[in-house]
Length: 245
Image (cartoon, rainbow, N blue to C red; front, side, top):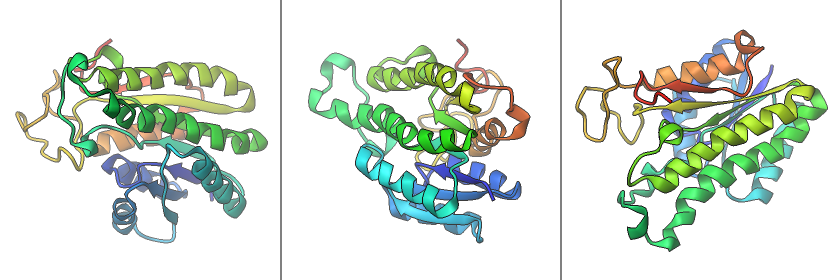
């Protein structure tokens, strides 16, 4: 069975993507700094296809390398990496203009989103190169495509993930490894579960309804699947038209 490594395992995006992959015969390894969240996902999707559930701080490179090495040794390969860990909602920080933010809080946004993505790629890529095969999906955001006031640092981090993906896909193409990113808009999540138009904190896109967790999970699944075998370096906009760029 091929194995997909997910960070941010408590995310509803991970839950939906993992369900799709399991239906295709994959195993999934779920990790999250919030172990209870990852365990909740594992309980929902269930079955022997959940290879492992672990606590992982993606900002700790040594821990990430040990985790990836352990997965590869235990399962023979890591066939897909999905970097979902990050975001800002879990921080419960107020959205402020950059000049009003406390510099001491900047790393709380930048490290999980930027360093976390880099660390996981750095740890997993050698295993994919050894297998001459792999697919990586990095989670960006609609804010990373065009920016948003009072979210400058987050926009910067998520925009950086897009260009990081562009560079990495060119480095890894000779090794049969594809690297893509996705940019959800105002999507259903454990932080904003209400899909109804006008729900608090939500934006209704031109298509008329908010992005569901399943929409995002389906996109992740597609980019990992053989249906996307000739797709690399893209940022797939999953926002219903609100993040056009």
